[in-house]
Length: 424
View 1 (spheres, rainbow, N blue to C red):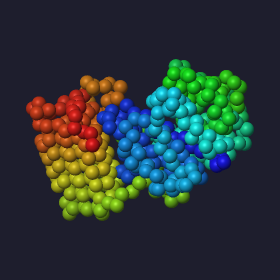
View 2 (cartoon, one colour):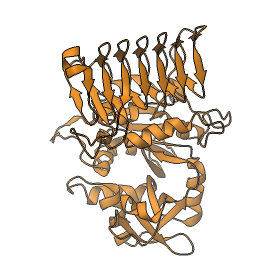
View 3 (cartoon, one colour):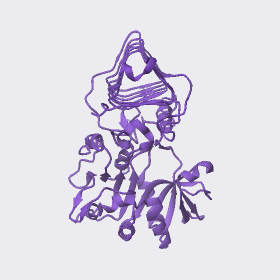
View 4 (cartoon, rainbow, N blue to C red):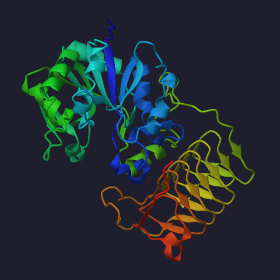
């Protein structure tokens, strides 16, 4: 029988609805980050850098681009005959077919996959956070404590603590109480959604709660283990960790990369971030181009101005165009003379000439006040914007738009255009 000390189960099936039109056609872990990577590259790279060579990636929502990116795991050295990376979508069983409903239910539906490796420990990860962590150090802590469950935690401002699962610990780090998103938190030690379970403990909890609707780790599995008086410990993490689940946090995390001394360093040799790299032509910078404090991906053609921005591979900025304080993802074309200020523009977008994007004052969103509440212009993948239009702040565009969609040549702040035609 195959035997692995620890395997990882990476939850990558979430929609990421708070990213609005950015995740209309792709799963959140497949969203581009830092001009070169996708969000899922970070936990996958952490695994291989931590010596974990068996990873199950659980997919569900819009998985095509994510599946194509992962492939057989070559960029992360996870193309193994035994172990490696396995993409695990929901599938039909003799008892019927079920979508994953909750994080723990997704893991439960893959019990046979985990059992095939006979692990001592199972690492549960989320596919949508930006961070570097040595999971081997966390496993050593788990063993030293004699823990049944170890939860990675980090201190957060107390005013934000109600957004997280909160652990209360004794002086040895053992969790004495755990509350999922408490209204009045009594601690600021927040769960990061990263868990190490001793395998018999995880198996017992999953089987016992298999009929629990929308079974979730924070709401159900952790309270079950705590209620059974199992040994739960908090592993405190005090380095960079970012949940890029909102448009503002996603924009901020990218913008932090272009600081002179970035808080999160993508260039460390000893802890590399691996990704699928295509064979792309070299960059070209024209004689009238201006580039300052920016990340420019492979194959870009810069004829205009780029300032404090992150550009993915193959982006074209035509002559006289300006891109400021913005994220522009791969293979997007910015037309001549177009000015873009504080925008997130997804992959394969075509923006016409003479546009002015990010103008005027902030206005409340008419589409979704919970998602669109920042002074950002957000454009979904494969969208088109015609020549000579103005687009206000806190707007959303998806699909192939035409001049008639912009009365008077303007999309006012807080407005949106959602059309068919943005799908690959």
